[in-house]
Image 1 (cartoon, rainbow, N blue to C red):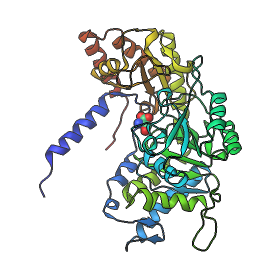
Image 2 (spheres, rainbow, N blue to C red; image 1 turned 90 degrees about the horizontal axis):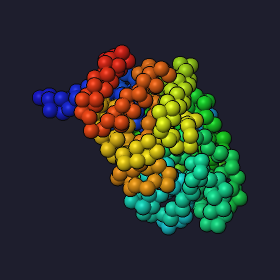
Image 3 (spheres, helix red, strand yellow; image 1 turned 60 degrees about the horizontal axis):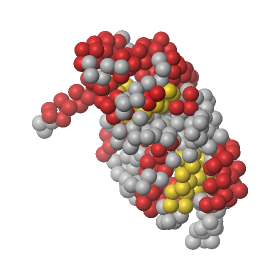
Image 4 (tube, protein in one colour; image 1 turned 120 degrees about the vertical axis):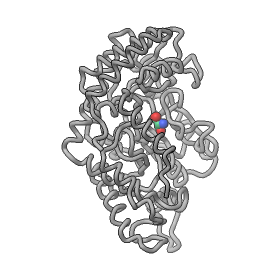
Amino acid sequence: MQQDRQLFEIIGKERERQLKGIELIASENFVSEQVMQSMGSVLTNKYAEGYPGRRYYGGCEVVDLSEQLAIDRLKKLFGAEWVNVQPHSGAQANAAVFLACLKAGDAFMGLNLSHGGHLSHGSPVNFSGLMFRPIAYNVREDDQLVDYDQLESVARAERPRLIIAGASAYSREWDYARIRKVADEIGAIFMVDMAHPAGLIAAGLLENPLKHAHIVTSTTHKTLRGPRGGVILMGRDFENPWGITTPKGEVKMMSALLDSAVFPGMQGGPLKHVIAAKAVSFYEALQPEYNIYQAQVKKNAAVMAQAFIDKGYKVVSGGTDNHCILVDLRTKFADLTGKVAEKVLVEADITTNKNMVPFDSRSPFQTSGLRFGTPAITTRGAKEPLMSEIVEMIDSVLSNVEDSKIITSVREKVNATMKQYPLFAW
Ligand code: DSN
Protein backbone atom coordinates (compact mmCIF):
# COMPACT_ATOMS: atom_id res chain seq x y z
CA MET A 1 0.00 0.00 0.00
CA GLN A 2 1.20 3.52 -0.78
CA GLN A 3 2.36 5.56 2.18
CA ASP A 4 -0.01 8.36 3.17
CA ARG A 5 2.59 11.11 2.83
CA GLN A 6 0.07 13.86 3.37
CA LEU A 7 -0.90 12.66 6.83
CA PHE A 8 2.64 11.78 7.91
CA GLU A 9 3.79 15.24 6.91
CA ILE A 10 1.16 16.66 9.26
CA ILE A 11 2.41 14.40 12.09
CA GLY A 12 5.94 15.59 11.36
CA LYS A 13 4.83 19.20 11.69
CA GLU A 14 3.17 18.53 15.02
CA ARG A 15 6.31 16.74 16.25
CA GLU A 16 8.34 19.80 15.28
CA ARG A 17 5.88 22.12 17.03
CA GLN A 18 6.11 20.08 20.22
CA LEU A 19 9.92 19.94 20.03
CA LYS A 20 10.62 23.62 19.58
CA GLY A 21 7.97 25.17 21.84
CA ILE A 22 7.38 25.63 25.54
CA GLU A 23 4.34 23.58 26.46
CA LEU A 24 2.46 25.04 29.41
CA ILE A 25 -1.07 23.69 28.96
CA ALA A 26 -1.83 22.34 32.43
CA SER A 27 -3.61 19.24 31.13
CA GLU A 28 -0.89 18.14 28.70
CA ASN A 29 2.22 16.02 29.03
CA PHE A 30 4.69 14.00 26.95
CA VAL A 31 4.50 10.20 27.16
CA SER A 32 7.49 7.86 27.11
CA GLU A 33 8.59 5.89 24.09
CA GLN A 34 7.18 2.62 25.47
CA VAL A 35 3.78 4.22 26.14
CA MET A 36 3.80 5.50 22.54
CA GLN A 37 4.90 2.10 21.18
CA SER A 38 2.13 0.21 22.94
CA MET A 39 -0.45 2.66 21.59
CA GLY A 40 0.81 2.03 18.07
CA SER A 41 0.86 -1.77 18.49
CA VAL A 42 -1.09 -4.71 17.03
CA LEU A 43 -3.43 -4.56 20.02
CA THR A 44 -5.43 -1.94 18.11
CA ASN A 45 -6.65 -4.78 15.87
CA LYS A 46 -8.51 -6.67 18.59
CA TYR A 47 -12.17 -6.52 19.56
CA ALA A 48 -12.76 -7.47 23.20
CA GLU A 49 -16.19 -6.31 24.38
CA GLY A 50 -16.62 -7.36 27.98
CA TYR A 51 -14.04 -7.78 30.74
CA PRO A 52 -11.04 -10.12 31.27
CA GLY A 53 -12.30 -13.70 31.39
CA ARG A 54 -15.82 -12.74 30.27
CA ARG A 55 -15.67 -11.43 26.71
CA TYR A 56 -18.09 -11.48 23.80
CA TYR A 57 -15.33 -12.44 21.28
CA GLY A 58 -12.90 -15.28 20.84
CA GLY A 59 -9.14 -14.81 20.87
CA CYS A 60 -9.11 -12.48 23.86
CA GLU A 61 -6.74 -14.57 25.99
CA VAL A 62 -3.75 -12.31 25.23
CA VAL A 63 -5.49 -8.95 25.62
CA ASP A 64 -7.00 -10.26 28.86
CA LEU A 65 -3.42 -10.32 30.17
CA SER A 66 -2.68 -6.69 29.25
CA GLU A 67 -5.98 -5.42 30.66
CA GLN A 68 -5.45 -7.39 33.89
CA LEU A 69 -1.96 -5.91 34.17
CA ALA A 70 -3.42 -2.40 33.82
CA ILE A 71 -6.04 -3.21 36.48
CA ASP A 72 -3.54 -4.67 38.97
CA ARG A 73 -1.05 -1.83 38.54
CA LEU A 74 -3.66 0.89 38.84
CA LYS A 75 -5.03 -0.69 42.05
CA LYS A 76 -1.53 -0.75 43.50
CA LEU A 77 -0.76 2.83 42.45
CA PHE A 78 -3.72 4.37 44.28
CA GLY A 79 -4.55 1.68 46.88
CA ALA A 80 -7.85 0.83 45.16
CA GLU A 81 -9.97 -2.25 45.80
CA TRP A 82 -11.69 -1.97 42.39
CA VAL A 83 -10.90 -0.19 39.12
CA ASN A 84 -12.17 -0.03 35.54
CA VAL A 85 -9.55 0.87 32.92
CA GLN A 86 -11.83 0.92 29.86
CA PRO A 87 -13.24 4.49 29.69
CA HIS A 88 -12.03 6.12 26.49
CA SER A 89 -11.68 9.49 28.25
CA GLY A 90 -12.30 11.30 31.53
CA ALA A 91 -15.65 12.59 30.27
CA GLN A 92 -16.65 8.98 29.41
CA ALA A 93 -15.61 7.87 32.90
CA ASN A 94 -17.74 10.62 34.41
CA ALA A 95 -20.66 9.74 32.13
CA ALA A 96 -20.46 6.13 33.32
CA VAL A 97 -20.67 7.28 36.96
CA PHE A 98 -23.70 9.41 36.12
CA LEU A 99 -25.31 6.44 34.37
CA ALA A 100 -24.65 4.20 37.38
CA CYS A 101 -25.73 6.68 40.06
CA LEU A 102 -28.39 8.99 38.62
CA LYS A 103 -31.67 8.89 36.74
CA ALA A 104 -32.45 11.51 34.09
CA GLY A 105 -33.41 14.76 35.79
CA ASP A 106 -31.70 13.95 39.13
CA ALA A 107 -29.84 16.77 40.87
CA PHE A 108 -26.06 16.68 41.37
CA MET A 109 -23.50 19.22 42.57
CA GLY A 110 -20.22 20.30 41.01
CA LEU A 111 -17.86 23.26 41.11
CA ASN A 112 -19.16 26.25 39.13
CA LEU A 113 -17.65 25.97 35.66
CA SER A 114 -16.64 29.63 35.60
CA HIS A 115 -14.86 29.10 38.94
CA GLY A 116 -12.68 26.28 37.60
CA GLY A 117 -15.15 23.39 37.23
CA HIS A 118 -15.16 20.94 34.33
CA LEU A 119 -17.43 20.67 31.31
CA SER A 120 -18.67 17.24 32.37
CA HIS A 121 -19.58 18.48 35.86
CA GLY A 122 -22.71 20.28 34.71
CA SER A 123 -22.14 22.47 31.65
CA PRO A 124 -25.51 23.23 29.99
CA VAL A 125 -24.11 22.01 26.65
CA ASN A 126 -22.69 18.74 28.05
CA PHE A 127 -24.62 15.49 28.73
CA SER A 128 -24.30 16.24 32.45
CA GLY A 129 -26.18 19.52 32.15
CA LEU A 130 -28.52 18.38 29.39
CA MET A 131 -29.78 15.20 31.05
CA PHE A 132 -29.42 15.94 34.76
CA ARG A 133 -29.97 18.93 37.06
CA PRO A 134 -26.64 20.59 37.92
CA ILE A 135 -26.31 22.67 41.06
CA ALA A 136 -23.10 24.67 41.42
CA TYR A 137 -20.98 25.46 44.43
CA ASN A 138 -18.51 28.33 44.16
CA VAL A 139 -15.17 29.65 45.25
CA ARG A 140 -15.19 32.66 47.57
CA GLU A 141 -14.61 36.03 45.96
CA ASP A 142 -12.06 37.21 48.52
CA ASP A 143 -9.57 34.32 48.51
CA GLN A 144 -10.81 32.23 45.51
CA LEU A 145 -10.88 29.05 47.62
CA VAL A 146 -13.78 26.58 47.50
CA ASP A 147 -16.58 27.92 49.68
CA TYR A 148 -17.26 24.81 51.76
CA ASP A 149 -19.86 26.62 53.88
CA GLN A 150 -21.86 27.39 50.76
CA LEU A 151 -21.33 23.86 49.43
CA GLU A 152 -22.74 22.43 52.66
CA SER A 153 -25.76 24.73 52.87
CA VAL A 154 -26.68 24.17 49.19
CA ALA A 155 -26.23 20.40 49.62
CA ARG A 156 -28.54 20.38 52.65
CA ALA A 157 -31.15 22.47 50.87
CA GLU A 158 -31.08 20.69 47.49
CA ARG A 159 -30.18 17.13 48.62
CA PRO A 160 -28.43 16.12 45.36
CA ARG A 161 -27.87 12.43 44.72
CA LEU A 162 -24.23 13.01 43.73
CA ILE A 163 -21.59 15.55 44.80
CA ILE A 164 -18.50 16.00 42.62
CA ALA A 165 -15.18 17.45 43.73
CA GLY A 166 -12.49 18.17 41.17
CA ALA A 167 -11.73 20.86 38.64
CA SER A 168 -10.03 21.94 35.46
CA ALA A 169 -8.56 25.13 36.83
CA TYR A 170 -8.21 25.02 40.60
CA SER A 171 -4.74 25.23 42.11
CA ARG A 172 -5.50 24.25 45.68
CA GLU A 173 -5.83 21.07 47.73
CA TRP A 174 -9.40 19.91 48.48
CA ASP A 175 -11.01 19.18 51.82
CA TYR A 176 -12.38 15.80 50.73
CA ALA A 177 -13.21 14.74 54.31
CA ARG A 178 -15.52 17.73 54.75
CA ILE A 179 -17.42 16.99 51.51
CA ARG A 180 -17.76 13.31 52.42
CA LYS A 181 -19.28 14.31 55.75
CA VAL A 182 -22.06 16.34 54.15
CA ALA A 183 -22.57 13.68 51.45
CA ASP A 184 -23.13 11.08 54.20
CA GLU A 185 -25.48 13.44 56.02
CA ILE A 186 -27.77 13.82 52.98
CA GLY A 187 -27.29 10.32 51.57
CA ALA A 188 -25.39 11.41 48.44
CA ILE A 189 -22.64 9.62 46.55
CA PHE A 190 -19.35 11.53 46.71
CA MET A 191 -17.29 11.39 43.53
CA VAL A 192 -13.86 12.96 43.01
CA ASP A 193 -12.63 13.68 39.49
CA MET A 194 -8.87 13.74 40.09
CA ALA A 195 -7.95 14.05 36.40
CA HIS A 196 -5.72 17.08 36.85
CA PRO A 197 -3.70 16.20 39.98
CA ALA A 198 -3.71 12.36 39.59
CA GLY A 199 0.06 12.15 39.08
CA LEU A 200 0.78 14.24 42.17
CA ILE A 201 -1.64 12.07 44.14
CA ALA A 202 0.02 8.88 42.85
CA ALA A 203 3.34 10.24 44.09
CA GLY A 204 1.87 10.98 47.53
CA LEU A 205 2.25 14.75 47.17
CA LEU A 206 -1.46 15.52 47.54
CA GLU A 207 -4.13 13.77 49.57
CA ASN A 208 -5.46 10.53 48.07
CA PRO A 209 -9.19 11.05 47.42
CA LEU A 210 -9.81 7.28 47.41
CA LYS A 211 -9.71 7.46 51.21
CA HIS A 212 -12.74 9.75 51.26
CA ALA A 213 -14.77 9.43 48.06
CA HIS A 214 -17.17 6.63 47.14
CA ILE A 215 -15.99 6.81 43.54
CA VAL A 216 -12.97 8.45 41.87
CA THR A 217 -12.53 9.14 38.16
CA SER A 218 -9.47 10.32 36.29
CA THR A 219 -7.91 10.82 32.94
CA THR A 220 -4.58 9.10 32.38
CA HIS A 221 -2.83 11.71 30.24
CA LYS A 222 -2.41 14.82 32.38
CA THR A 223 -0.03 14.88 35.35
CA LEU A 224 -0.26 11.07 35.40
CA ARG A 225 1.67 11.00 32.07
CA GLY A 226 -0.03 8.09 30.35
CA PRO A 227 -1.94 7.74 27.09
CA ARG A 228 -5.09 9.75 26.43
CA GLY A 229 -7.86 7.93 28.31
CA GLY A 230 -9.97 7.54 31.44
CA VAL A 231 -10.30 5.27 34.49
CA ILE A 232 -12.71 4.74 37.40
CA LEU A 233 -11.57 3.65 40.86
CA MET A 234 -12.99 2.86 44.29
CA GLY A 235 -11.04 2.64 47.53
CA ARG A 236 -13.63 0.16 48.74
CA ASP A 237 -16.49 -1.46 46.87
CA PHE A 238 -19.93 -1.15 48.51
CA GLU A 239 -23.54 -2.25 48.06
CA ASN A 240 -25.45 0.22 45.90
CA PRO A 241 -27.58 2.40 48.19
CA TRP A 242 -30.68 2.18 46.00
CA GLY A 243 -31.37 -1.51 46.59
CA ILE A 244 -30.85 -2.54 42.95
CA THR A 245 -30.74 -6.33 42.99
CA THR A 246 -29.42 -9.12 40.79
CA PRO A 247 -31.89 -11.61 39.23
CA LYS A 248 -31.12 -13.80 42.27
CA GLY A 249 -32.30 -11.03 44.61
CA GLU A 250 -28.84 -10.03 45.91
CA VAL A 251 -28.11 -6.31 46.29
CA LYS A 252 -25.70 -5.37 43.49
CA MET A 253 -22.28 -4.08 44.43
CA MET A 254 -21.39 -0.62 43.10
CA SER A 255 -18.56 -2.20 41.07
CA ALA A 256 -21.10 -4.24 39.10
CA LEU A 257 -23.17 -1.13 38.35
CA LEU A 258 -20.09 0.80 37.25
CA ASP A 259 -18.77 -2.04 35.07
CA SER A 260 -22.17 -2.29 33.35
CA ALA A 261 -22.33 1.49 32.97
CA VAL A 262 -18.99 1.53 31.10
CA PHE A 263 -19.86 -1.55 29.01
CA PRO A 264 -22.47 -2.04 27.67
CA GLY A 265 -23.90 1.21 29.04
CA MET A 266 -21.58 3.83 27.55
CA GLN A 267 -19.10 2.08 25.31
CA GLY A 268 -18.65 -0.90 23.02
CA GLY A 269 -15.23 -2.38 22.31
CA PRO A 270 -12.44 -1.23 24.63
CA LEU A 271 -9.31 0.35 23.08
CA LYS A 272 -6.93 -2.52 23.80
CA HIS A 273 -3.85 -0.63 22.56
CA VAL A 274 -4.65 2.33 24.83
CA ILE A 275 -5.35 0.05 27.81
CA ALA A 276 -1.93 -1.55 27.24
CA ALA A 277 -0.36 1.91 27.15
CA LYS A 278 -2.19 2.72 30.40
CA ALA A 279 -0.59 -0.43 31.91
CA VAL A 280 2.85 0.81 30.84
CA SER A 281 2.27 4.27 32.30
CA PHE A 282 1.09 2.78 35.62
CA TYR A 283 4.28 0.69 35.69
CA GLU A 284 6.29 3.88 35.16
CA ALA A 285 4.32 5.64 37.89
CA LEU A 286 5.23 2.85 40.33
CA GLN A 287 8.98 3.47 39.86
CA PRO A 288 10.87 5.64 42.40
CA GLU A 289 11.96 8.22 39.77
CA TYR A 290 8.32 9.05 39.10
CA ASN A 291 8.00 10.59 42.56
CA ILE A 292 11.06 12.73 41.88
CA TYR A 293 9.44 13.93 38.63
CA GLN A 294 6.15 14.80 40.36
CA ALA A 295 7.94 16.62 43.18
CA GLN A 296 9.67 18.71 40.50
CA VAL A 297 6.31 19.42 38.78
CA LYS A 298 5.05 20.84 42.06
CA LYS A 299 8.21 22.80 42.83
CA ASN A 300 8.27 24.27 39.32
CA ALA A 301 4.63 25.37 39.62
CA ALA A 302 5.28 27.09 42.96
CA VAL A 303 8.27 28.95 41.51
CA MET A 304 6.31 29.92 38.40
CA ALA A 305 3.40 31.25 40.48
CA GLN A 306 5.77 33.34 42.60
CA ALA A 307 7.54 34.66 39.49
CA PHE A 308 4.20 35.87 38.10
CA ILE A 309 3.37 37.54 41.42
CA ASP A 310 6.81 39.21 41.48
CA LYS A 311 6.09 40.64 38.01
CA GLY A 312 2.84 42.21 39.22
CA TYR A 313 0.35 39.59 38.02
CA LYS A 314 -2.53 38.40 40.12
CA VAL A 315 -2.37 34.64 40.63
CA VAL A 316 -5.82 33.31 41.50
CA SER A 317 -5.90 32.15 45.16
CA GLY A 318 -2.44 33.66 45.61
CA GLY A 319 -0.43 30.62 44.53
CA THR A 320 -0.67 26.90 43.90
CA ASP A 321 -0.59 23.58 45.75
CA ASN A 322 -0.41 21.54 42.57
CA HIS A 323 0.80 21.77 38.94
CA CYS A 324 -1.59 24.51 37.84
CA ILE A 325 -1.39 28.30 37.95
CA LEU A 326 -4.31 30.53 37.01
CA VAL A 327 -3.35 34.10 36.20
CA ASP A 328 -5.86 36.95 36.22
CA LEU A 329 -4.51 39.40 33.64
CA ARG A 330 -6.71 42.31 34.68
CA THR A 331 -4.53 43.71 37.44
CA LYS A 332 -1.53 44.14 35.12
CA PHE A 333 -3.20 44.67 31.72
CA ALA A 334 -6.73 46.02 32.03
CA ASP A 335 -7.43 45.68 28.28
CA LEU A 336 -5.70 42.40 27.48
CA THR A 337 -8.06 39.43 27.11
CA GLY A 338 -7.04 35.82 27.62
CA LYS A 339 -7.93 35.21 23.99
CA VAL A 340 -5.41 37.75 22.67
CA ALA A 341 -2.78 36.73 25.24
CA GLU A 342 -3.06 33.05 24.20
CA LYS A 343 -2.69 34.01 20.54
CA VAL A 344 0.42 36.19 20.93
CA LEU A 345 2.09 33.62 23.16
CA VAL A 346 1.52 30.97 20.48
CA GLU A 347 3.29 33.33 18.05
CA ALA A 348 6.25 33.12 20.42
CA ASP A 349 5.96 29.28 20.54
CA ILE A 350 4.69 29.32 24.12
CA THR A 351 1.50 27.29 24.40
CA THR A 352 -1.05 27.97 27.09
CA ASN A 353 -4.81 28.46 27.16
CA LYS A 354 -7.21 31.27 27.87
CA ASN A 355 -9.32 30.55 30.92
CA MET A 356 -12.14 32.14 32.88
CA VAL A 357 -11.09 33.43 36.28
CA PRO A 358 -13.57 33.37 39.18
CA PHE A 359 -15.99 36.31 38.93
CA ASP A 360 -14.71 37.09 35.45
CA SER A 361 -16.01 40.25 33.79
CA ARG A 362 -15.53 38.72 30.32
CA SER A 363 -17.18 35.86 28.42
CA PRO A 364 -15.70 32.34 28.13
CA PHE A 365 -14.71 33.21 24.55
CA GLN A 366 -12.61 36.22 25.63
CA THR A 367 -11.78 35.54 29.31
CA SER A 368 -9.55 37.54 31.65
CA GLY A 369 -7.25 34.68 32.51
CA LEU A 370 -4.54 32.36 31.32
CA ARG A 371 -3.99 28.89 32.73
CA PHE A 372 -0.46 27.52 33.01
CA GLY A 373 0.84 24.12 34.11
CA THR A 374 4.22 22.50 34.61
CA PRO A 375 3.77 18.74 33.86
CA ALA A 376 4.97 18.83 30.23
CA ILE A 377 7.89 21.22 30.65
CA THR A 378 9.04 19.23 33.69
CA THR A 379 9.00 16.00 31.65
CA ARG A 380 11.52 17.74 29.40
CA GLY A 381 13.82 18.16 32.40
CA ALA A 382 13.10 21.76 33.36
CA LYS A 383 13.98 22.86 36.88
CA GLU A 384 13.18 25.98 38.93
CA PRO A 385 15.56 28.47 37.22
CA LEU A 386 13.88 27.91 33.85
CA MET A 387 10.48 28.75 35.39
CA SER A 388 11.61 32.29 36.18
CA GLU A 389 13.09 32.64 32.69
CA ILE A 390 9.82 31.45 31.13
CA VAL A 391 7.80 33.98 33.12
CA GLU A 392 10.27 36.65 31.98
CA MET A 393 9.62 35.63 28.35
CA ILE A 394 5.84 35.52 28.84
CA ASP A 395 5.88 38.95 30.46
CA SER A 396 7.94 40.34 27.62
CA VAL A 397 5.37 39.12 25.06
CA LEU A 398 2.31 40.24 27.04
CA SER A 399 3.83 43.67 27.63
CA ASN A 400 4.42 44.08 23.88
CA VAL A 401 1.52 42.34 22.13
CA GLU A 402 1.72 44.69 19.11
CA ASP A 403 5.50 44.47 18.72
CA SER A 404 6.34 41.72 16.26
CA LYS A 405 10.11 42.27 16.68
CA ILE A 406 9.95 41.51 20.40
CA ILE A 407 7.66 38.53 19.81
CA THR A 408 10.08 37.16 17.20
CA SER A 409 13.07 37.60 19.48
CA VAL A 410 11.25 35.78 22.30
CA ARG A 411 10.36 32.98 19.88
CA GLU A 412 14.01 32.60 18.91
CA LYS A 413 14.95 32.43 22.57
CA VAL A 414 12.23 29.84 23.23
CA ASN A 415 13.43 27.66 20.33
CA ALA A 416 17.08 27.94 21.40
CA THR A 417 16.18 27.13 25.00
CA MET A 418 14.12 24.08 24.12
CA LYS A 419 16.98 22.64 22.08
CA GLN A 420 18.67 22.09 25.44
CA TYR A 421 15.70 20.03 26.73
CA PRO A 422 15.52 16.86 24.64
CA LEU A 423 12.29 15.16 23.74
CA PHE A 424 11.59 12.13 21.52
CA ALA A 425 14.67 9.95 21.59
CA TRP A 426 13.14 7.95 18.75
N1 DSN B 1 -9.92 19.84 28.81
C1 DSN B 1 -9.19 19.43 29.96
C2 DSN B 1 -8.39 20.53 30.55
O1 DSN B 1 -7.67 21.14 29.80
O2 DSN B 1 -8.44 20.78 31.74
C3 DSN B 1 -10.05 18.82 30.96
O3 DSN B 1 -10.70 17.72 30.43
